[in-house]
Image: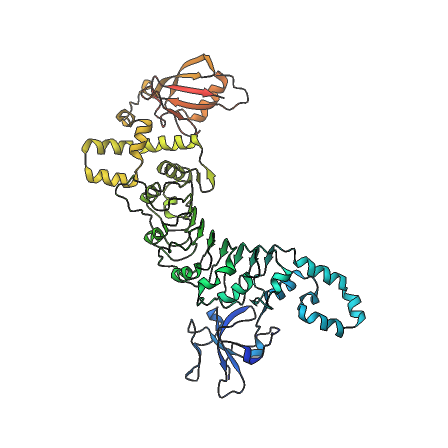
Length: 538
């Protein structure tokens, strides 16, 4: 009878069969699973373990054999029956630390058994290993501040007080991909580490705590928790969150969050950083439920399937009362395709840093144009996709944006079509503000120009604020690239090796200076006309 997937081939850590518990985590050939059944499986003799494997392809069935259901599995093919001696039951946290950081084989022997071992082994063995080396290794454990035990088969704290005695200074602990089965077992570890600030518990299968508030003391110093791949819903995660009274950073990627809910006032009240990457949330209405978190400064909702962004306000240009402290937002790898979503982000009062790569919207224009259009739409933005937004870049982006949609705006003003104006404002909520800042677009800018030679030339005054005696009037072609104008002014003003900085001053808007910062644009693009000025600084 074949009841299991085959020989596991690991060195098993055998326990008394009576000590094996339902819900216990085990490992076999790199695969982890949960014990769901301990007992006989007729017609075979002896004890079998019914295992529900994390990887459904590792199993063979749904916990049934010859028509009898022995245990329930997460997946129709994730179950197997395995002999106890074929699986690894893991090791204590302290044993794993000795194994990972001990450096010699017998550094992993438990302290309680060390005296017995000393009596049993002969002098030659002691001489070969070196007791002084072992003592040094054991004392070095007390200096550890950052411990990484990912995939080390950790199943619990071990002997009471052992961790606190040997590793009291641990501040960061990685327990991802281990054999922990409950938050109580995690708390048994954490309570022995009074300085524990960061904990990674990802990719374990932890049963929800019966009384989470009673475990608060274990996590009293914890500020940063990484808990991805726990297969929790948001509601289940919030049940656990009552254990972490001082949590400031919470990374919970790739769980089963679909529907969110506002957290109670006493939960996550100090949270500054929240990472929801990879959860299938998909609706921004769910994200808005987190909007009352009072201290939240950074939010990552990448790869969640979001299609749009929306904050409920009475007016398109009104700021939202949600996410009052939010400064950084990451929405990469989503399905956002409309500019209206970008305008909605301008409703956030503190947003300074935005990451939005790998969305359909970013494929509409080239990268440089998309960057300009985003900067112009979000007033408070200081960094976009990891690159700082300078004051000059903002002025240029806003002015180009004003000109780009100027013809449409003038037409809407003329026709006074209220419905079309409302639709325009949904995608261009900052446009009226930019008109106040730079002045309304002029109809003359959008008229078809004559093709005569005279109409292709404009007279401008070139001057330097630092050298008032240097003023030149020049006839320049409208089609002249800013790049060529740079070369011209370098010779005229003798700037040497200094690269000049050019700004355009319209005779119609004398108080506004527009940087000519795109070398591949023409003077006509910037709407330079007869009688205008170009300031030269270096």
